[in-house]
Length: 359
Ligand SMILES: Cc1ncc(COP(=O)(O)O)c(C=O)c1O
Image (cartoon, rainbow, N blue to C red; front, side, top):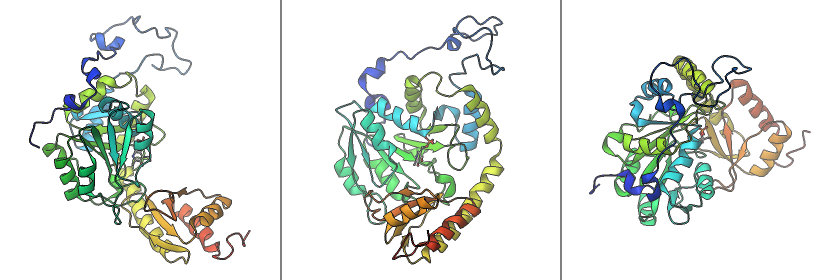
């Protein structure tokens, strides 16, 4: 990059002067016995414990532990109510509604475009190529000074493939805004995280989540990892209590069970490969795309009929047929061994010329 990267130059101008909400507990550091500062219920919570108190706005203990697990420093972490909140905040911080744009490479995770639409931010589409890889030249040609965020996803949802480091690097070098690399599924990939690129590229923001490998989608905890200059901008704009006290307690507990997480990931990877092999033997399957994630994108001869047939058997998968490059494809999450078997049993009953003949 020719000029030093300064994220405050990219952010929405009015936010540079923003005075963030200062919570009651932010303004007091000592040890107090009588807390009459936050309009809490002095009689306590019907649930007991400390739930009548507002949580730590910074969730400092959780942040320290998360940083340790993710191999980074606490000042490089933003914690959100799912990575969806980080996506939304990035848009709200960097994109002027009605003026700026983001660039996405479909087929990809739907929330980038939905968050942009919610914030009245234009979406520039540069589809992935036939191998589901980003077209670096086309992306850089389509971006202009108003294109503030480029969203990349590796492994990509819904295609399952990882992006190449060389492509990510070229985009980090050539794109003048912020490159958001969503690594929601990275624990399932042998490539590993690209977090080391942060040393070289201050315009990189990585997204991670506890919703996938950590098995805590219900908790709603996702993070952005970036240089402290970027993190402090996100922290200033976030709702002050975006993570509840029970979430922090449960997340800390989950993060103490890394071995269990790794075991589940290994099991999913074994199942993914078995399922991919089994699906490929079915006559109505045209293609099983290679996956580094916990799902498979599968192209069927008649995806709509297969989708309806599976629903009739009580099995829900995701129809991705309307996404560019995914015509006729369903996205199937890798389940337990038993669930995968039920899926295969159902699919084996599907008759090419009479999908409901077995009913
Ligand atoms: C690529 C990708 N990023 C982010 C998310 C959302 O993660 P979270 O549950 O942390 O909001 C998903 C959810 O499916 C996803 O597929």
